[in-house]
Image (cartoon, rainbow, N blue to C red; front, side, top):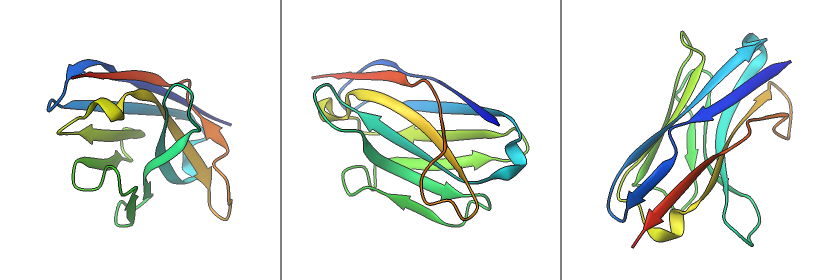
Length: 119
């Protein structure tokens, strides 16, 4: 099993920055790809960004491309999301997720961290 714990959320003004962290523990060697998702009030959860184990394959949603950067430190088993030029529409609970090689869906999820961007 893999456990994921997010941190770094908070309240920030529009145009500001935040960095989210996700600490993985347990059988972390089985993790192939990690991702960030978010869910705003009254909306479905949506994909934000993902990265493979080697860090050389990344993907972003169009809404965050150019503003957010995903990265991972395998020596520390930690995933990061650097969020710049934040907008009020970025307000959501942000979730860290992980999946094993060959899996289609993300099998492991954190509890989420709240990000609130004020205008």
